[in-house]
Image (tube, rainbow, N blue to C red; front, side, top):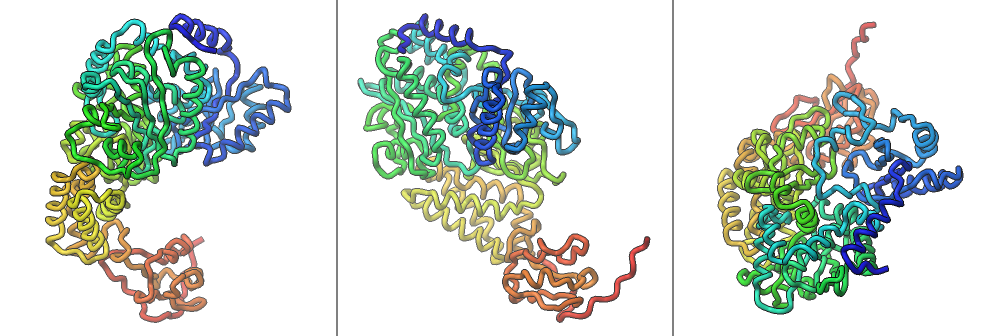
Length: 639
């Protein structure tokens, strides 16, 4: 079937909606990220039980993209009752069918309970994780089957494309995107409409649009979730962009490590082509457009647009100097527009609802919503979409559920491995491009890693620098050598060999790498070092001057001791010590030979909690016997 005109698209949508029964029971199962937690077995169990009971006509099983609440995977939502169940197993399925789908009763043990208060939230809309979000880009993720174009069209899919092709000129589309205030969601935050205008006005008959789905930040999966859960929104955004800029060929650059995203994009492209929404004379217009997929090999630097272009061309992914910018000379030296997945997915909403609606969300200089991936020391890990300008504290506590175990928050890293650390004192600042940059961090593509009081800021700065140093393409000597010297310096500090002049050296090196590097990787790579030395100088001083790690993380600066007054001589730690560093015998107070101890922590983890005889310290010595001695008689506990 081919949809040849906007009227035919409208009729097709109406026919789909007419066939849908809003009162029919539908179980929406996350089949992307939740696969790792057994979602396939849960789906199969539902299908088998429903078929065995002859309930196929009464109950639909819908495979969706990510629902966002990854900490509670695997999850389902039951419509139209809006019941939310979490942390399921295949063994729960018969009970769900009996009690909830047939009898309409809620199974108490499967609903979400707040970890702090114990309050239970059986309905999806009331769960704090969802209630405090504004889902625009993620509106379809977890709702539709991403492999079914009809589901997308039923929710106004491709209506924005129809509006753009029939009622707007390319110049009007670009004006609308500019007036909306949409900024690129890939990290730099450059105004999207202005970027489009550069390509529109560039000379040449052949031009390209490229969707950057590389997303190399550890712990970040915003773009992956959109490509997996709502691929048609990305295609529609690219179609509108291509029409506005006069482009006939587009590429989606997606890393090969995203097999589900690649699969769903290929299905979406094939379905759009079959309906005539991709190809020639789209919706009866003179607009032709095709989309090709390029699978990247996973190089972090290929997230930078000129390195990405080189990779598509079959070359080694390395940044090049700008100017010329891709808008003038990009893919195969032709004018090229590059926006990331989330940016493209915003476009249909802007065209359909208007620039004023979009500009009403966010801050004065940063409009719309932003998706963040919450990771680290936080109760509710997952995907979060909030208006730009939302305070960090609201995201961490109202949506993220706070820090596990009631621990104190120490810092939040925004912007991925080359983002900076936002300390607790700045948690009430709004999340936007300019505010974060003012305190030394970046919004980046949306990664957000939470760190609690047990995090060593020196070690975590070393960890992220190790990643970016390894991912540097090496083209710029200042990035290649400067990052290595910073990494060596941080490593020495965590090993107890730091010198007092090291902090000034780190700051100077960081500023030089930031100022001179060619691409965005080098210009942001020092952020973890610069912000940690600025906001957590006391931890650096403790490592360097006192040879002490306050968080008890750096192995070279910690020691393990067995307390004589608590040891019962049970021999559990002695038998399991991999380095045979523990001396003692049955009913003898054990002693750790510090010269043999490898700081693995096995003794601490295995010591029975009723004894708690093993302690971990830094910068101090605990008085213990030099050799094993008999366990002293213990006073009997009072009745």
